[in-house]
Image (cartoon, rainbow, N blue to C red; front, side):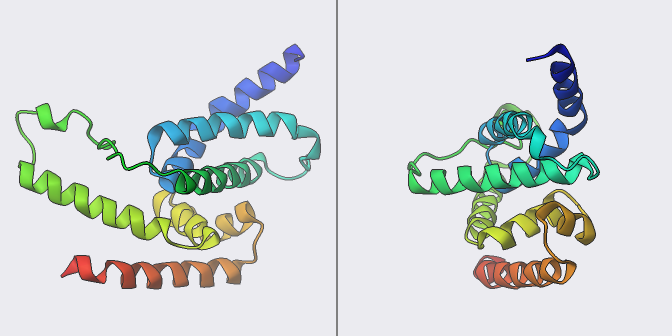
Length: 175
């Protein structure tokens, strides 16, 4: 790899890795998988750099790569899903903290998080990608349209359908 390529890749990683990680973890709901997805996305970006339109912004291009990588990983994991219980990624050491929620509240929170993760995971790929970018990443609808190479109306309807479906799936939990 040429020294200029290495510097350019390092700069891309510095600027975009945290955002891409948030997108991946929002989609995959697993910190380790998300980190691997980001690394693979940068490898794919480097390999496919000649296909990138230099007049376009690099952010949406990288977002599309991380979403595609996350979708692929999600599908592979769904096929080989083990019966292991995931660690509580938000607070892995919370059980040792002197203060904080009671054990009952932690269990309820974990169960709710599992219901939400399951509901988001059951959405069709495009709806899940739109939902994650909007609600986990906080992207504007126009940005999502650019990142996913979709029309704005398609993004809006996909988001509406995703939210409607999640409300249906989570209604029993809300009672």
